[in-house]
Amino acid sequence: MADTVHYSELGLVNTRDMFKKAVGGGYAIPAYNFNNLEQLQAIITACVETSSPVIVQVSKGAREYANQTMLRYMAMGAVQMAREMGSDIPICLHLDHGDTFEICKSCVDSGFSSVMIDGSHLSYDENVAVTRKVVEYAHPRDVTVEGELGVLAGIEDEVSAEHSSYTKPEEVEDFVTKTGVDSLAISIGTSHGAYKFKLKEGEEVPPLRFDILEECQRRLPGFPIVLHGASSVVQEYVELINRYGGKMEGAVGVPEEQLRRAAASAVCKINIDSDGRLAVTAKVREYMAQNPGEFDPRKYLGTARKELIKLIKHKNEAVLGSAGRA
Ligand code: 13P
View 1 (tube, rainbow, N blue to C red):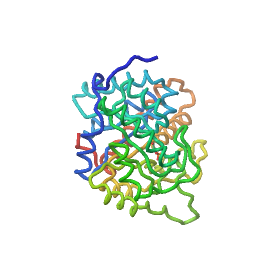
View 2: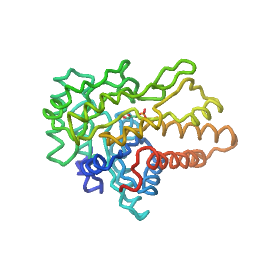
View 3: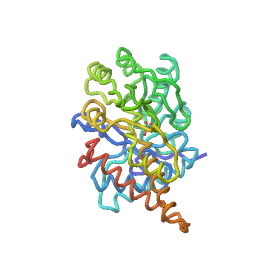
View 4: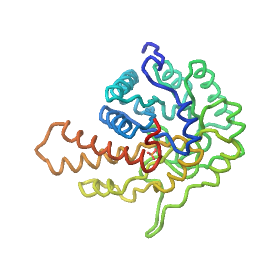
């Protein structure tokens, strides 16, 4: 059993201030998933170099893969690394898609500064009840909580759903009031993973349901909204993967233009995981194919890390607008 640590001892911050500034400033805070050293190094380096606040987030699958205590010390190392780079960008360690009270509690106790309780698979009343319970545990410890209404299709590690259902705007005020959450993830047409839309030949990606977003914004003025499933599924990476032995046909994501529009609205946290996975896989495949004699993981992972830095800087500067906001 891991000992209890408060996130402030690790140099982390919760999301409260970040979101207040983002909602007022018309930009979104990036929330990048990580499971390993190279991903975390890349996220921190890119966010320091673009002077962007950042949420580094861990899914249930990442906790199982990397070990929760290890992740806590990695986040602590990330804060220290940023400081040594001469920067004090705000860094939040967030649990992505916690699906039980126990997981959320365990993360709060082990140094996370923010948690998501995803009760979207439950009935409305059960979702309210479990979310309220997490808020009651987290808030006295100054940990912020994200809830979810509406279901996103796709697979996010272990949380999967075959069909999506859009958020019902008429529920959002009641949910936020009853639970006391600090932010709310809504479903407006995005999904997790690299296959977000099934397009026929010549068809374009359909627009997200900005009408639902606007109605939520109208009912909850100034309240932080979260957008999951926001990878663009960068086609340059899909092509590299396919060129070097991969098989990812029909992989498609959310166009950057739509994400820019969301970031300028009440959406103040944008979740990106798949694009990072694609960048790493593309560069590792390319490196392996071009350097068949190489067997030093630092070589191919180093190449992947470099690409990830480039990708994250681009997101912060040209899509989310978080660059220069630290
Ligand atoms: P993507 O699969 O689009 O990167 O979404 C990640 C996400 O929403 C994590 O919660």
